[in-house]
Image 1 (cartoon, rainbow, N blue to C red):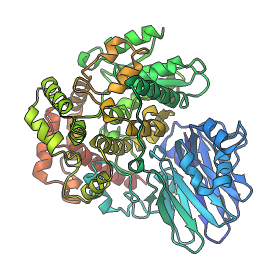
Image 2 (cartoon, helix red, strand yellow; image 1 turned 90 degrees about the vertical axis):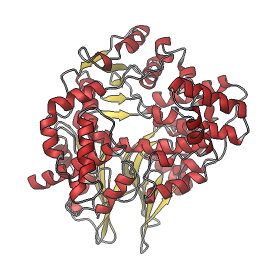
Image 3 (cartoon, helix red, strand yellow; image 1 turned 120 degrees about the vertical axis):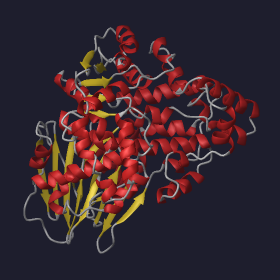
Image 4 (cartoon, rainbow, N blue to C red; image 1 turned 180 degrees about the horizontal axis):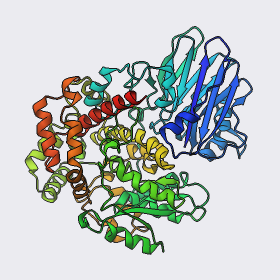
Length: 591
């Protein structure tokens, strides 16, 4: 994992270096990092990594670059730009920039956030990857701009008590999916995914979008299904392989589901890099245990696997101190102990480069909204076949399904409060997307971004580098371009994944219809730790100060949560805000 901060003075030279190493170690005490500082005229760059720094280069003539950069299509770029092999990611980007200017970022496939300073033209660009895997924040002071990979590294440049209360309403309205310029702190700005900001002398800073999934218009049409399966396999395989590193440092968070088992199997097919698996298991909570599914796969690849028993490693111990603090609310942080326990076990075995199946659900699941597309193309027989089969399998009303999915479909209404500004924004965005299968995919990929910021915190706590092959730009664009039927069939979801992986998985996995949940684990955790939980959340700030929910509604839903009943859809979003503000207040108190 890499951290960076760059301070760019508008006119004056920097007269002292800044260090961020101590800030990182204060946040993540177990993290051993190396720091290098580069200073030139009005630029002060600080780069920190948990790996060795060897001859790190930041300056290339009049160009400076710093960031957290992983490029996944190096071979393609080297060929297209006629470049030499063996270059660092930074050097590769600079060479591309010299040939094509800022337009070169359109060709990048990878995960990155970086800053380029072009002294010749007095321009500074700060760029974030298309999917938003790597975060990028900035602050503007009187005579300088400061960019950073993490909000906490900017604490010397803003007041953490100067909160932006409008942000919390937007976080709530977007159900925890935040990819907007604002942050919880008034003075801190975010660069959204697929955007860059440009600073030019004597001009206002501007933000520009260079990539958006909804702008893709071309489609992929093959003559038969097998061609789609082969191409999908090829792209996913490349996505997995480019996230592996040389040596015995790679692991997969392996469950019994299609997503993680596919990642694991593809990694096992790679003979150049070794891969291990780390899995959560339960002896007491049998309904949460998935060994019946993945142990057969381990035998197929002659692998013993690594197990972490979580029967008595419960969530919500020492609540809320056990929940890692990110510098903005994150719904995934509430249940992150589960991932942290597995990641710690992975590092203990020496596997710090961790791959997961996250993003598979959002990318591949699909739904009955495809019937609206069938209606538009007058595929009436197929429409009714889908409706009938789906209703039988799910034991739901075929009539109601036709209303909700075919005749009056409204994807946004199911997930977003229709009186919010976000509802209007996303509704307008979806209008320009031609099919309902694409609309749904766009919305699902947007929602996947809510999880990503917690990865850096988990990485800092455990010393891991988390990777999600399903969130590869190439794979997302491929799925967006192909027919929606390949994501969804009435019998089961993830149709293209099941078919593409059939030869490298086991029938137990590819034919599996049900999905294991960890509800029993969650409620065991709640039951044991309820006394400490209720003390923290019974008098909520979200009621008294923010007014996001009434006191009565909050009390009712807290009771439902405790008893394992269905809560309102935004309960976890509200809970994330509540816990975050209280943890921030405590952090401010201690400092």
